[in-house]
Length: 336
Image (tube, rainbow, N blue to C red; front, side, top):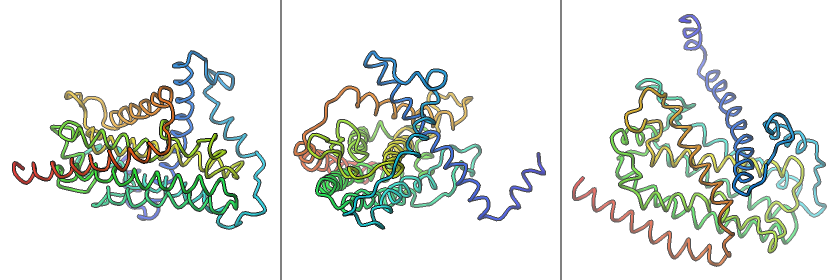
């Protein structure tokens, strides 16, 4: 065993990063696939129907069947589309969605070592910088389709993502002030005694609402308001390219759940002193709880009207996030 560890430690840095990236990519894609199956099963249970149950035992092979079907479906490109940008846009959304996982720490097996590809001091800033780039895939996809309905859908989606991203960023700054660091691992370490969702309860509520809107999930899924926009920015997409947009949406849902776990729920820290369970297990359980919350919302609430959605973001959430930030700064300055 020691010989294997010595070999790993002696390997070039680029090779270690490459192996870690491939493994993490496989895990994230597999998690996305079964998160989708989990959603269909849970919604079926909530709506008194069976859900997927034909492909494999208990429908467990349904994600594989969906992937095969998506891969072999005909891929059409409109004559009016910009061929390069039209084909590139789904990969922009997918690349930005996956790149965030390069710096997310999933656990700390022993002090000073993290289960992560990289550890960036300004980790949360890196995350927001990457996720902000994802809007380019949506806007370019709608514009490059050469049709008015995808263009209107991309404009609507871009406006929604930008407006809610401001409130989300403001809600997180309070956590950074309390923790005194922008490192994701440092924020988790600062929650060893008290998870930040308690002192930052208003920031957490703002974050969780804006995260739902940011990822275009129900009841804020105005991007897919088919009665108004046919299907939104991806109206003209089919086959595998449509599937890439779909994957990016689910991966972003996993991302905001991981960030919420790290910022507000102690990351891999065990609750109630239950340290005999590995930190990675606690991290995954917390992320799974957020995923269940997403599904619960989708099965429960109707879609908002677009003008009310935007008014709620600009007139309610952004001022509330600003007030929370100012109060946090005052409290830390006076009593911190």
